[in-house]
Image (cartoon, rainbow over all chains, first blue to last red; front, top):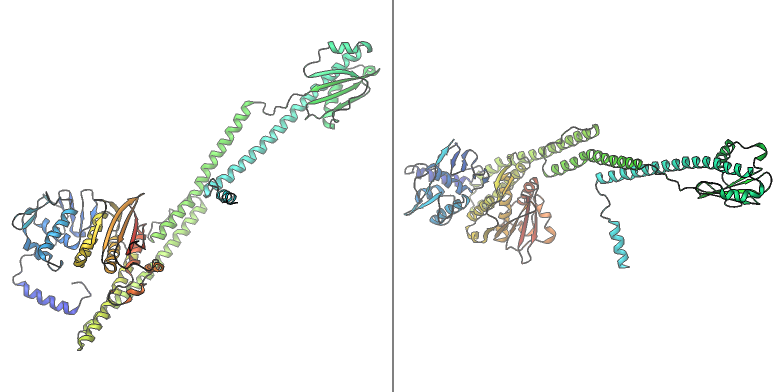
Length: 138
Length: 454
């Protein structure tokens, strides 16, 4: 939580965290400091930014960035909606199912991935998404 | 009348009248050069005509005396016929008369002298010398008339047509003259451009400094005066920069120091028993906190060291809209973007994102909508942000960009805000060589127009 904070909120959050820690799933977002390349795109976690194949920075919202990092971290593996929900919880308001789909469609648009014939972020029937690309770390 | 007035106005603003220093200096130099060349040319021509005339007059004297000598040697009765048969040479006519010539006007002394001197060069027996010589006609006129009185009886009158003076005697002279003039003009153009270039550079640097206090300094080289001006300019820029930095530092320091007591107050407020009082206390503190945060952001922008990068403007605008939609899901449908698929521009992406976020945030907050349109024109990207709100009072469209200024209606607590969003947005955009202006749409609602070099 960033400073300055509401003390009541802090208290509530500490309680919530304590409640959750026992059954918390493994963390999805690893603090990866290494630059990642996939399909020409470059993700620089150190500067929290994404560069397109021409080296032009493409802005992402916080939610999109976290989502992309999660997909890249587990590239070529299916991430269920539940896992992604957990990631985005607290950031998105409204019905969660739709939040994930909206975030994915925004991300696809930014990555120039056609929603109907998505090549990069593929929809897995039965509830999930997968980033289909060769990952190159440096 | 109307027509005359228009003519007058048009001619006062004669388009060819030079406005730039280069052209004015050039015009002065070239006009001066033309005057000098013209004067030199005239002097040369006059000199040449004079010389030519002297030579002609000498020649004339000798010819006149030779004719006279032949005539005087002939007996009185045969002179007329002898003259007719005589080879007089071109442009000369000779007649016998009883009186001296009366026209044209008498010749001035120096020319008379030239003719007489040469007449004496022709040997004539003393008894045959003319008793009187009358010379009339100016050397500038076409004709000179010489009358010589025979010792016995009558006058010999010679009319000599002078050839037109030819000051441009050689064609090479004119070619040389033209070449000289052209060379001088070209050299002037080159020199003037070179000399006035530092002025242009200085103006550009001042322009840059106005937009961005951290603009790179002027190169300190060139002639002494130029170098001194550049050094003075850089010193001034450094002082302004330090001044701005000091003020910004002061602002951020105060802002930062205020945060701790605000946090302490918040903690203490939690212990207020009365629920209503506590709530009011906390909301006041939140407002104070928001103002301090905005002040800190404002200060950070001025002294920002974020590097400029190439980024996709479309992705940035979409991100800003998506963030706004996430923050206000009920207004999400009123947020839309239209424009090209991509537009790469260079700038400080985080600062620009904040700038657009402030503008979009305002549109959503006061206008419940944000329709963003991106267009490009003449190397400038134009972003318009329209909303459906009540619009803005026309006389406040400019004041609204002053720090902490708020339109009267929005001073109430409900809308919140600190009065720094727009100044921050404008600061950032101006630092990028762009700007933002606010206006009202014809159909109601406000419109922010952002321009930025693309």
